[in-house]
Amino acid sequence: MKLDLLVLRCRQLEPSRQFYESLGFRFAAEKHGTGPLHYAAVGDGFVFELYPASANEAVDNTRLGFGIEHIPQSLAQVPETTTREFDGTRIYIVRDPDGRKIELREKTAS
View (cartoon, rainbow, N blue to C red):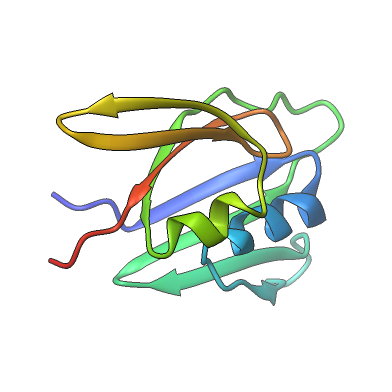
């Protein structure tokens, strides 16, 4: 089984797009019919979408983890909150604009 779609509802859509782009995602604006403007990033068989949260919609506390390239450059653009070691790998934990914890680790070649 492989995860191929992730949709996040965001109270702060533009800051969220900028945050995730600083991690290496490249989003394109999309709008389907009468639906809301949202952003989609496609790569490696995976679609990552950011949708605006409605006023009465709760934003979840999902915790995400991404393997990213050039981690020092990405960390320079986001506030680092915590670091920890796991199996000899340093993991950096940051928060997105909606407060979700995001774990970052250096992407390794597969």
